[in-house]
Length: 328
Image 1 (tube, rainbow, N blue to C red):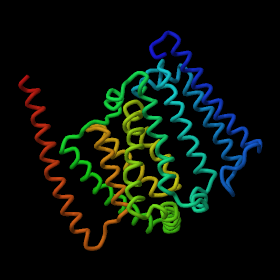
Image 2 (image 1 turned 180 degrees about the vertical axis):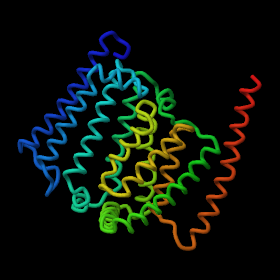
Image 3 (image 1 turned 120 degrees about the vertical axis):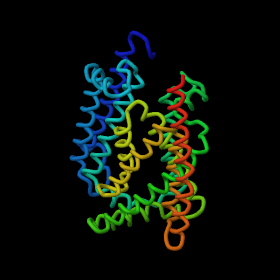
Image 4 (image 1 turned 45 degrees about the vertical axis):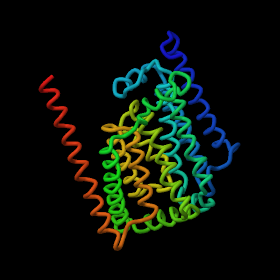
């Protein structure tokens, strides 16, 4: 379908159907046919948010807007896959914003049973499937070609040390944000902490911790940094990544997630998705096990031991590239 003369029309039809289905979903909630998204939520407000989101997605799907967006992002306005990705990005972001605006997500999460490893697997696996489908796995690309497009490659040794060092920096930054939140917004910080402890209490064991470290790191990085970032760009991808972490509601933690997403995006931009996944997984592991007390000194020493060889390797690589350009 890609590259065919009628591809542009197919893009519009496919995106229009997706937007229409989203609008219908909102209309059914507004009419009371479907129930409220959560107890105590403003069903009408959420429904209106969904319908407005559908309208915006339809606007993005129109050919003139697609042409303008393509000038900013690395997209092909006549590519149905790119168009659908844009529409789904608008819908995802809009739905999550509507959820945050009209639903007490923290209370809703506390009323749910804690996550299990099975729940986490079911929650993360669709990201991996969408990423594979989005790059045409076994349709336009074989497994090796798809992995290369997604940036899933064998990392160099210095990229691994970079990922580990960056994870340490990210963890220190997140702890600083938590401390800031406790000072400036103590009630919000308390609510977020209580909700987080409840949601992940079922994973407080070796298997659960391993699942938290590995599943989001692999599935989320392959989709967001691997599939989406090369097309939608660093900032848009970071916003979408942040939007799926509604368990932090509107808080300093949400801002921290966005900034960490930018950091992971930069790692992906200058290395590959494998490196960003290693960083993401290591960060999740540090958050799960915690670093404090007598371990802090060891953590600092380990960070220095990782930063020094990484910095030297990056400097050496940069110098060789400059020499190659100067002496072709």
